[in-house]
Amino acid sequence: MTTGRPVLTIRGLNVDYGTGPGAVHALRDIDLTLHRGEVLGLAGESGSGKSTLAYAVTRLLSPPGVITGGDVHYHPPQGDAAPVDLLTLTPQELRAFRWQELSIVFQGAMNSLNPVHTVHSQLTDVLKAHRPEMRQAERTGRAEELLNLVGISRDRLGAFPHQLSGGMRQRVMIAMALALEPEIVIMDEPTTALDVVMQRQILRKLVALREELGFSVVFITHDISLLIEFSDRIAIMYGGRIVEEAGAAEIYRDPRHPYSDGLLHSFPALHGPRRELTGIPGSPPHLTAMPTGCAFHPRCGKAFDPCAGHVPVLTAPDDAPERTVACWLHHSAPGDAADPAPVSVSGAGPEADPGAGARESAGDTSAARSG
Ligand SMILES: Nc1ncnc2c1ncn2[C@@H]1O[C@H](COP(=O)(O)OP(=O)(O)OP(=O)(O)O)[C@@H](O)[C@H]1O
Ligand code: SF4
Ligand SMILES: [Mg+2]
Image (cartoon, rainbow, N blue to C red):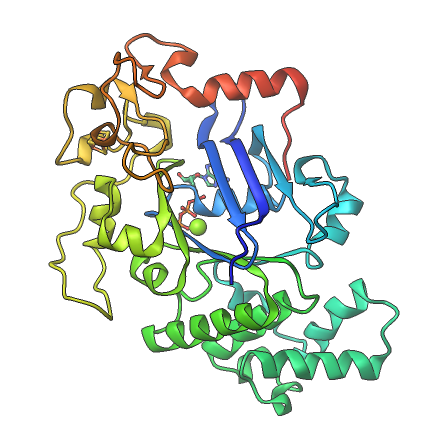
């Protein structure tokens, strides 16, 4: 399964929608590493920035979305090959990179199949564009193989999308994403529109394929119980930041961030002991009116003195170096010598937002990048 070697590293990624004083900060200081062969789950409520992260990493962000700082590197499987800086690839390089090394299944993808083309023509189109040397018969053979991989009979190759069930259409999209055997597959809510049984069937298939083909997956959903079952590690997002990252079993057994705990108690688990469902009071914050300090503090039952005035930094708690959490319950209080990096919001300006510094310094060396 996972080799422990990184395949994708994201450092200090910041994304805004819009520019100037009206800009809203959709992603702030995102640090994330995807290891080769692992399923990394990304969870968070609606509006937490999950899709923005997927779009930014794949350079599919369209205006007014702007990457204002940070780095995204792809690490090729050949150990001695230099990392590829995804944020500086030219459009031509990007075209070759997408599908071949990294593919994405979008939110609601099953509705993005072209209704007037057969599954055959849509699957072979990808091969035609990226493997022009393949003959037609080879392309058809590969399309059959791909359908087979996702558990659809090859005789459905001639079907139009409307002749397939929602689950089948979603699996066709997954087959398409795997067509060129990419190293990374990013899946943004790939099963949300499907019933629970179908969701799990597709995910089981995906995990089996990952074992067989060795790719890595970033799996995005708001349903943390799905992630607990199918991911190796989970990152939890809130208000455009990652607030906790740990192994799936650790998050389930011992969530450190009160928001992760709230998410876990918002969805019924299909396996394991029953948990009382309590939900999370209040609503996610608006990007235009982000609370000061820890953005979760207005909804947090454990908020205390430093929470409203200081942004907690995502770092490892003292007793668990292999996981990270951004919460004052697990770090020294601001002002302590051992404090990781207290960020005061008592005064206005960049100090109030640790991302601002990163954005400014990135702005010195690189123009804001979009799409
Ligand atoms: N084109 C846009 N212009 C302005 N703000 C945007 C735009 N697209 C997204 N946003 C804002 O960015 C934030 C993050 O949106 P995003 O779609 O990444 O959230 P998400 O976590 O994927 O939510 P969901 O679970 O609903 O898919 C939201 O507050 C959203 O309103
Ligand atoms: S930092 Fe404070 S408000 Fe934020 S999650 Fe932790 S305890 Fe709650
Ligand atoms: Mg989304």
